Length: 362
Image 1 (cartoon, helix red, strand yellow):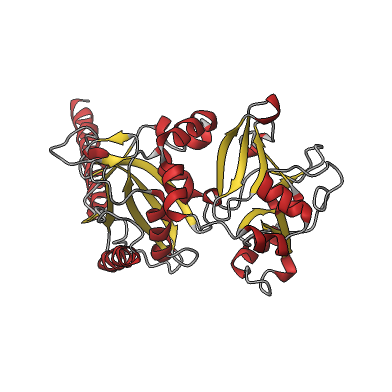
Image 2 (cartoon, helix red, strand yellow):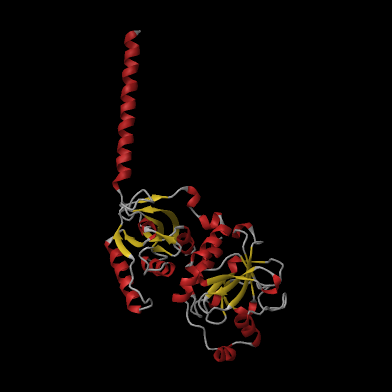
């Protein structure tokens, strides 16, 4: 009996040891790749999945602008160059790590988006957030990323858009630690608090000052636009409900700024709100719009304007569908031009055709 017990005890120890070795091997395998882009996967599709890491001040403000682009798979808020976000010794930064499909969006395109989100001349933080952990930096994962980052920085300097020198650092990627869950997708989980923080931070004003195009000459606009279009876009007018061009338009396509043709909204995000004006749950690209508080007509509302042409478009309300985080963009038809899906390529908007290819597949 004693021998049997001893035999089973030996077997148990051997099994436990085997499992432990397997577990250790698995752990070692997981730790082998420290750089997300140095991936030995053989699947051709998976090899197109790349990683970019950017520091641009408060990470709350850095997720949404990237997350809305086709080809961006995931955006994580976190800390890089050290695990302690408050440690000046480790020079840690609040940052975002972006997983993207380079067949749909390139690293160079991500850099263009990044430069428009930050003040690259500020070496002491970003906007309202001060300190080393809020300094800007591009952390390259590969040599090709380093070259692309250096080229884009040099190109920006040659533009002489800013009066001060560009201070954004270009550094080798070292590590990244995701922030707590409540920080992730903050703009989606807390849209009201996010909007309050974002618009009080000073970012929108900076973006408008340095990146928006100058308004067109009023005389030229009067020639190009109808009286109603001019009144709405330039004089903050409002067209009649239920008696405008697009309130009940159900065709597939995109809506662009009537003034300069900037893509603003998609029919995929349009819904019937019953208000008599075109209603959308979200813009095609969030940075294509500016929002400001409007106190006219003894009301407090949020006005929506196009970022480039500064056209008055309408207002955004918080009584929209849940799938759009409760947002309803109520927009004047006179501020828009509709481009049908069938004419996107012909009109120079072919990149948006893929939105409707997805819709057709469903």
